[in-house]
Length: 412
Image (tube, rainbow, N blue to C red):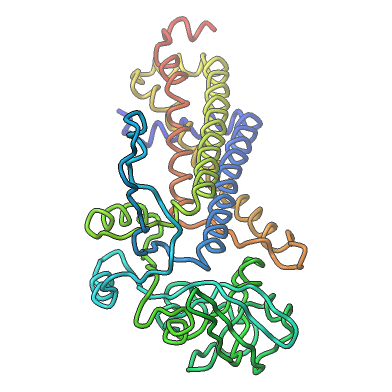
């Protein structure tokens, strides 16, 4: 009696060798399909990671602010205008987050939170000689803020320091004002109570990844911004960075149910970006499904032809004592071998394509567009799926082969 899988494996390999050209073509077809799946998956993953890095590189994952000011108008004289009695928004003023000093350690203690940075932000003017630019003034604790947006890694000139009387500004703003590291400029803010100004020395120029942000960003110490914006001891917002960016929406909802603040996740402030990322993921899944379907049909068609061509051999094997189950497993093993070999070759081809993209595809600045890689877990998952599809593709031909009558098969 033959012992499985030795018999089935030997027969399967012999059938594959005898139909060498068919075997090579289908393995190449499987390899091409696996390469497309692996390369597209790596490309989309790299593109999404690059897009998120650029988008979230200059903003927090979750932002906590004071609630909006609301005004409730007096009851209307006309009964049919009752709907106007609902609360209505009014022009907002700079407001501090209530009890923010006590809130910071509480938020830092949450398992999902990697860092918390208080900030005072408002508008103002940057003045240098006759030049002036409207700016977004931000007051931060540099060490805390660096944990949120990685500010020090964005420095293109100078060294990021925020001692009293110092500032970090965007690269484009420095060009507009004609200042360099070490120069001084005047920051001016205004309100109904008057105008406040302060002279600061530029310690570093930063590139935040967006020219508009670079053109209007001025970062000063937290206390300096509190004085300039007439908000002593206050913080207009708390910026949170998370260990996993994709839990931001869930965390924001949980915090919203616990605290009376205005809490917004990066998904809410970048709704169009999230929609685009979801569309990319769906498109990638569709492409993978279509390619896998083509691979399955290719393997199945070759094995169906093999059943027809090997009908006499199958009949002889049955006459010699091979069971239906053994014949069935012979073709299942063929599907598995084709799927496995095609997967290995396909992954090697995908790695080659990724290397070509990384080394030869460049942007207008001569640098690589973005980095892509094929992680080992993703590669193993794709190889496993392709191998399983090879076995599934062999099911119908295998059942057909097992159902052949030995006498009729020998006469074929």
